[in-house]
Amino acid sequence: MPATRITDVIIPEIFVPYVINRTAELSRLVESGIITSNERLDQLVTGGGTTINMPFWNDLTGESQVLDDTTPIDVGNITTAADIAALLIRAKSWGAHELAGALAGSDPMKAIGDLVSKWWARDEQRILINILKGIFSAASMAPLVHDASTDPISATVVLDGKQHLGDAADQLAAVAMHSAVYTELQKQNLIVYIPNARGEINIPTYLGYRVIVDDGMPVDGAVYTSYLFAQGVIARGDGLPVSLTPVETDRDSLMSTDILIHRRAFVLHPMGIKWKGSPVKPTPSNAELATGTNWQRVYEVKQLGIVQIKHTI
Image (tube, rainbow, N blue to C red; front, side, top):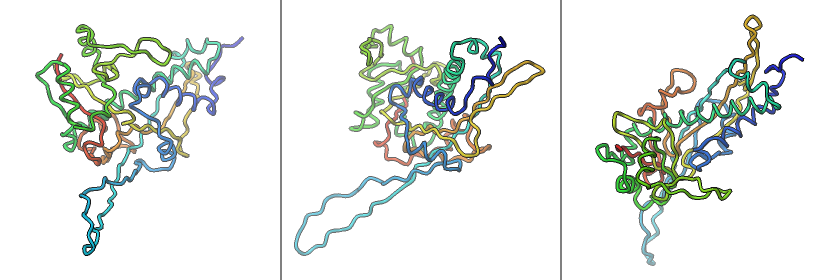
């Protein structure tokens, strides 16, 4: 019997939605609730263009007016502004030598789909870390940066960080940190584990915040960067523009190599911080996402659910 080939098992109509859904399931940031899928963004991704406009109403200002029988009520204005997300169009290809083990599975398409989904989940986290680096390099985000670069991670440092949101800090639900920071807190017996939905005691928390560990978190010498997040502060959208072929298979007969090509169009956007960059290519690279001048805060500070904390261990 001839060996199973990629071209024999990949059915795009099944493979594409499976990878999208599985990628979301595998992402620790999605699982924690920091990233939430947005159906409206899903639709906008397919609408063409390289940016997505998301207008919003500004909060109301001013004070109430004392009524009397001679003075008319002042009419205040309701103003609008626009949040703008950058569309990300990315692609990756793999040869059969990387997928050879998967091709031997009982369900080859599922096995390959799982491998691809895991790769995209890791890549999305890399992209988000670059986005975080970029937005907190923007001058408009300075009120949400807590720089304790000479102090080791501690309850005082984290609580001083959350105070940047004032009375809106109760929206914060998770903290993302480097594994070295996490290990240091474990050594101090400061990590508390709580049950997951199955009743298993395995969700780490610190000061009541769910802990997300990722070695992609920035490290500059002895200074580590951690982030406090509110639920749903990052919006995620997946779509399929008409001109984009999501999945193709090919074969280099001379090299006896099967090739899988996967293309995606998606959005990972910190709500309230608009993209204003002009990328070299149609959509931004990780380096461009990490550039502060490409971002501008448009929400009021207390409406944003992200705080950056710089510290040592």
